[in-house]
Length: 171
Image 1 (cartoon, rainbow, N blue to C red):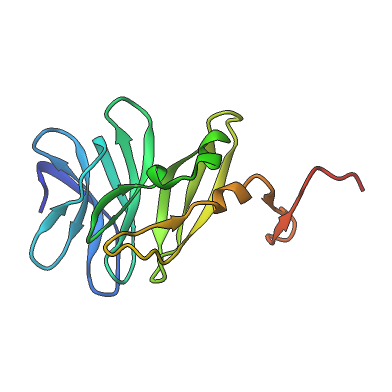
Image 2: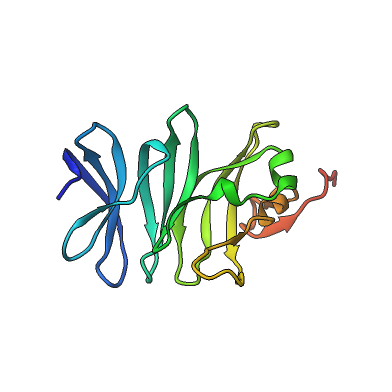
């Protein structure tokens, strides 16, 4: 089924048979959608379009959503609802210019992968977010400080291994 529009696309399925993707709403927007055995569930948006791209074994969903005023951000949807991952960034990461704009997958441990962009340097980097336990019940927080590591971690194109490069080196 759809969310009232005439189009739907699926992108991933978990081991419990939950399917995610996006569906056209009756208002003309694409919204991230979770299909279970019974219904199509609208996962919401940031005021415009949203797209679900990854789902884990417990039904947590990640993806990308466009803001009503322009631009896009990454989201995590769980039983607690829709969360903008950029709202969880620490001040140092924000001041450095990093914006999480795309998440592509989440595993059963809650590790999230995606892409971030630096609004100051225009640099684009892949990232891995690792969840941390927070004593607040019903809150899903992430260690966003990993984004800061993107400034110094690069892929070695020859080996495919992650290496640390503080500055370019001449051999």
